[in-house]
Amino acid sequence: MTSVGGASQSVVPLPSGKRLGSDFYERPVLEVARDLVGCVLLHDGVGGMIVETEAYHECEPACHAHRGPTPRAKTLFDEPGTAYVYFSYGMHVLLNAVAEPAGVGAAVLIRAIEPIWNIESMCERRNRTALEDLCSGPAKLTQALAVDLAFNSGSLIDGPIEVRREGAEQTAAGRITATRRVGISRAIELPWRFHAVGNRHVSA
DNA sequence: CATGGGATTGACT
DNA sequence: GTCAATCCCATGC
Image (tube, rainbow, N blue to C red):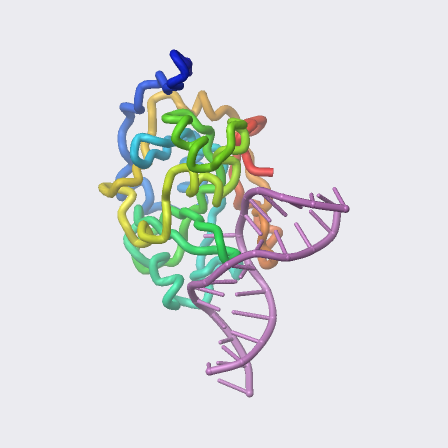
């Protein structure tokens, strides 16, 4: 990144890697959650590398799909690669990627990304300047990427929100570890949270 | 139809 | 460290 004449601009070229398709998402949700760490999340030319995810599956009570396809949870049963976007705590928007075959309620919550592309736009939307505070939480990154409830049930495979796998980002993400999920009160013992070890942009 | 809790964040002590 | 903000939706009467 460089700053010239007061007009700060990102000079990182946009990713050229392969966009993830249906076959990537149509797998066990734990594999999808782990493999999404190191991938690239983009919307409107803004985004970065995924550094933290959590898996949710209808078989465990922390998942919204646990009680079946209720009005809120029905998106979780849609085609793999669908975006599940929902409203939390009265003010926050959280982004998930639906996984497993259609009819199975499961998704991966994107909890944090490392900001890379168009950082200036993210700073404006977040009203923050510290890099580590831009996307280090599930509601922070949706605000930074301008993702709202209108994206719920849209496609991550051919819609405006893109998920890509670059050639080398497993190297960029480094070692990935599995720990307990954050902020839930049920099934707290499951180690279904995945994050890049030592990355400064992982949530608190 | 009324009620209570939640996959969080940011401000404040 | 504590706590309020704020509203959808699942539940129960």
